[in-house]
Every structure is written in C-alpha cells, then in structure tokens.
Image (cartoon, rainbow, N blue to C red):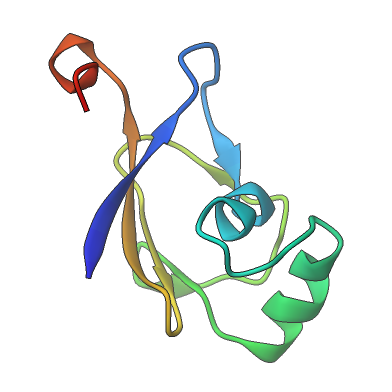
Length: 81
C-alpha cells in the first residue's frame, strides 16, 4: 500500500518519529526509539534507525507491516483532499 504523507504548510520536513506516530505505528514519540531498535525502516531504500531523521518531500519511507509512504508538500491541487 503506497500513500502520501503531507507536511504541514509551514514545515519543511517531518522527523521519522513524527511519521511513525502519524501513521499510527506508535502511540507516543517516546516509543519511536524502541520501535526503531526492533524494526527495520527504510528511507529511500536504505535502513535508518534515527528517530530524528529529517524527511523531506520526495522521500520514500517503508515501514514494516504499515506500508510505503511518500513525503509530499500540499499544493493547491491537493487542497481538496
């Protein structure tokens, strides 16, 4: 399953910990460190376990058992979604 994750309009990036929380993989930001120690998350095809990793529009995040997500910035065409 491939989905887009939209950044807030005033944000340049989201951290990996924020993305994990956004897609309901973890319930709190504090759980990110534990989750990343136990699971392999891929950022643009490379494993990464840094909860503070900055994710910019155009990057792809693969989360085990949650899916594949593409970072995107909302534009006028996406406003209706």
